[in-house]
Each structure stands twice: as structure tokens, then as C-alpha cells.
Length: 149
View (tube, rainbow, N blue to C red):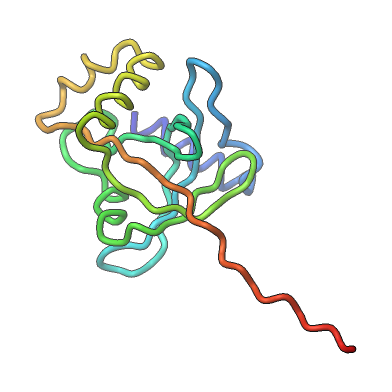
């Protein structure tokens, strides 16, 4: 699994973003690039993740290919919730958070519709997999240039 995602990131880099991201379709997940700030380094760190859309939000899962442990990008996002998402159709600033309660159940069910083996894979992990919601932030408004006259 890690080799597949590593190859995917390499393809994205080599093609300068022309290949590697796609929008989700009914019953299928898409791929986005999430750029977070490292919690210790303060440097930008990017990862490509599977996602689906829930209204204007993007939903992904914090997992290491179903292996134990929490992915570094999720730890970084928890420390610095504002991040950037690049999509096949453009990019935006987002704020990340974990879904909980009824929202988590609803979003998990959506993932289950996309991936029929979801519960079996999740059972391989010793801890619950966080369902991560990426909420778009409004773009900053820049003042209009004044015109003489």
C-alpha cells in the first residue's frame, strides 16, 4: 500500500501536478493533495489522499494503509488545523477536524458504500480510524485598487 501511494506521489511530482488528482464520482473516491504545516519542523508537508465530497467539505480517513499508528499528516493537521487542498479542479484553504458522533457514523456509512471491505480493513487497526473533514475556508479578500478621479 505504501509503495502504491509513494509511486502516486512521484507521478504527481514528475508531471508537476498534471497527473495524480481526480474528482470523486458516484460510488468512487477521488484523490486530493493535502499540504499541512509540520508540528515540529514548521515546514510544509504534502500527502495525496483519497476523499469524497460531503456538500462543500472533503472527507478522508486518517490511516496508514490500514496499518497501526496515526499518520504524520493527521498529527500535523491536529496541531495546525489550517491547511491547503489541491484538487483536480483547483485548490483552496481548509480547516481540518475529526468527525464525531452521528456525523462520523453518517460519513463512515458513505465510505462503506464506496469501499465494501471498509469494516474488514478497519478491524486490522488496533484503534478507531479518524474520519477527517476538510472544511473550505473563505479566501481572503484583497482591497480593490483605488482609481484616480
